[in-house]
Image (cartoon, rainbow, N blue to C red; front, side, top):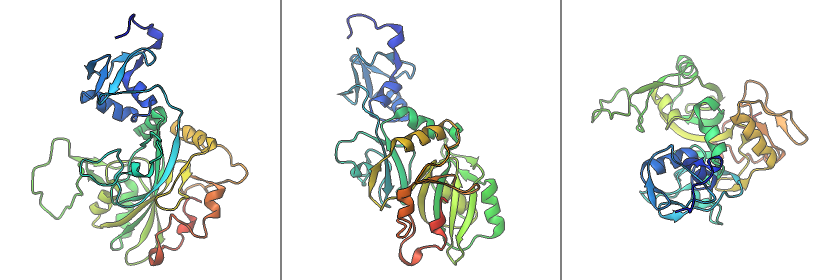
Length: 318
């Protein structure tokens, strides 16, 4: 316990302190508090409005005393298929944290499901993570999507305007009767309008798809609603970032890239292009392609491999 009450001006909400320490995002920190996994000066805390002095109070998460604010770190990962986007998995599956073995205390911003791959942002900056993931930010996320069978023009128009999908984690199959009643937190919700363009016109076509929300398994659910199974999903853009890494590789963001992300989170347009950068054409991804990404276009690590490569994919994000 502290010897004297801290001054009011030094008090901060617990979830903000935990996020600043690089333990989790602010939203995840709120879940930790609500589930009784946080202690303040030896007492378990479950109230989200609880405040503390990060310099004087003892704060523990799962019994471990947290350290003071860490130097902000920002990484991008090309997540391979077969990894879950969590710090740990009760089923013992590989997680994206397996790519950060050198001691970086970061957490993923948003998620890509187990079967999806591509660009994933990780940081210990809880404020930026919270700003990017809140619904009002409407951060554009660009995906390459391969579907089974060719959707009709009218079905694609439906996706562009929004479709009703299940809130739950399971993929909805309108032709199959449910085996169990819907859970209380499930139901139906309308998706936000999406931008789609055909990349490869084939029996199993590829599309570029741009979303501004991130509901659980949203793309898979959207295509299932129009009668088509999604075979592959690769995220190639997140706000101002464009995928420029081989699968399983990571890199730290440049200060300029972090600044651009902050502008995106605040709803401000990206700054004018600088040397070595090219701003995307209006109506496409709205991303900023770095010179390193442009130099890798010949091998295009973000494109589907071998004979699955859709024509025109190299133009994604331009």
